Image (cartoon, rainbow, N blue to C red; front, side, top):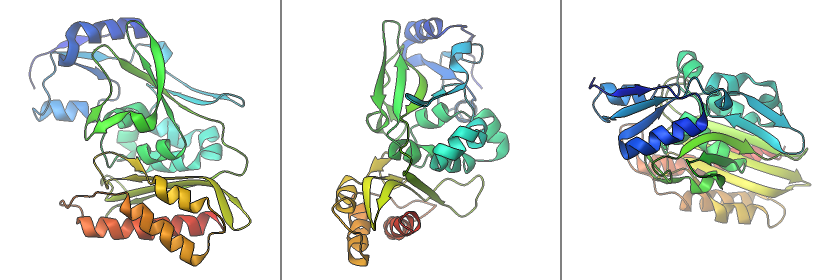
Length: 284
């Protein structure tokens, strides 16, 4: 591994200043389950690594019945997977966190790190999309939030500018009737990247659905929402014919590639199949 400066800020402001000083040659480090491997392989060669582990403000999960859920940047995937509020009120996110890597990886890797890796096949990204997540971003001059849907610009790419740091993720309070479902299609339950990831959130109502979200992973340059399929699902009673149209619209939203894990055609077929399965499960 190449030589680099190792920096340990104790506040968010200090971390942002360090990241700004080194510009694009700096990388923040939380769990390190992706960054350290990329550095070992020589894929990235940062001049400075800014370790976030000593920043108290980046720890903890906060729940407010009016404001919703806040997950700080230092929270591990294992904490997300096992947190009682998340398991009860945001089960799709708990499920998504549970299928990332192995337990050892989840004990180190963070939810925000999984988000910032900006991989199209990231497991937690479809869940955050379907749950209308917001990303908290701090810089040397301001703090602001943006929708998760606007965070990625391409594979491995985000809207973050030098000096900016993701400090957490926020999720709105779910309605009592909200149901969510996430499924990761992979050869193995542990360690494998998703061939397809599908997350659906909706409020069932007498055979129809409201507030439908259909989020898809590993089938486009970034995780995405199948918005036309969502609109179809909200138009009235979901009959077998309507469900088929919803599934077809979800497939049409994708632009998958063929790689060592699956062909593009197989991914398209599985998006349709898993979308149908999700609605069947959630509307029971």
